[in-house]
Length: 405
Image 1 (cartoon, rainbow, N blue to C red):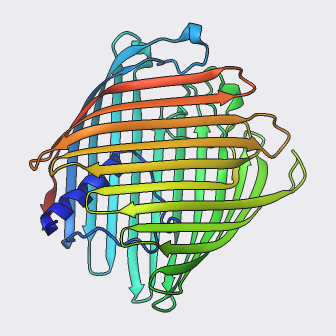
Image 2 (cartoon, helix red, strand yellow):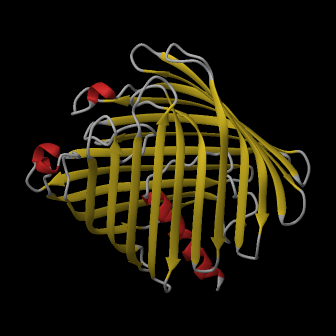
Image 3 (cartoon, rainbow, N blue to C red):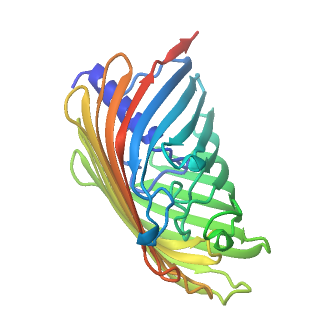
């Protein structure tokens, strides 16, 4: 594969991740330490990439309800202006993204909504061994389903989240590195909707450390620690959660990487219950090739819940697949399953599933056409019944990067 084609493939994968609207943490993701960075040529200076997206779709459950007698379907159109700005300097890097999607329904016009997402990241190298970073993001969505909160029922209730994190990256030697990062977050829900009285919101803060020691060219030892302190609801009920684990990353073949870790999770005592502890573990498998990216992952840990309040033991299984069929055609798919069990006095148990797939074509002039299908399902034991939602449609995206000298 030529450098030009590798650059196009890397840009395509990056665009798909950005379009998904996920805010990536700056602490290295488990299993990514040994995976090589895609080949790309970074030019110094500023680049601004404005884009415009138009989409049409059919939604068979626009009210986001579980009662089959209340299911209502409707067509919708999406107009989404996007912009991405990047800067590459000798010792500094900056990137910023914004999208503001306007959803217009054909019949149920009272559901018309505005979905906004923004993020920014700044990195600076202080010396050859030490660097710092700061990142932040905000998202406002018309439903709780779109942001995938832990321990939150799917409902058409406005959801708002802010997050800021920063830290220091240190390379002690060519084999040993440590990242220390802190974060603050704020989660808020509208006081309207069927289950608005069950959605607490709150504030959170914490610190995370990620230590990596490369033992051989194919194997690395990892040790991670995560502390989260959250205040949930109007009363500000505090919860403190500790997750610590140790494990290994291994390059199995030229294109395949695996990681695994096991550790302990601890929930501090609170007004809702005594302290609790348990094992946590995670495992992952990544395959990177010229045309294919596959990422499968499982994790269990303790997580504060901004929905029903308290803390959940969260089991999460996810997978992602991206395949470049030819120079212009591609396909992608992603699936996630989550089980949230209460650790405090709440008896709420939640099972959630997300699946989406798409097939698209991108031209060299910056025009991209994509057909998509997605489904979400959720079961909440206290609410009786399973919520299901299916969406199908297409997107057309036009973008043109501009260099600023």
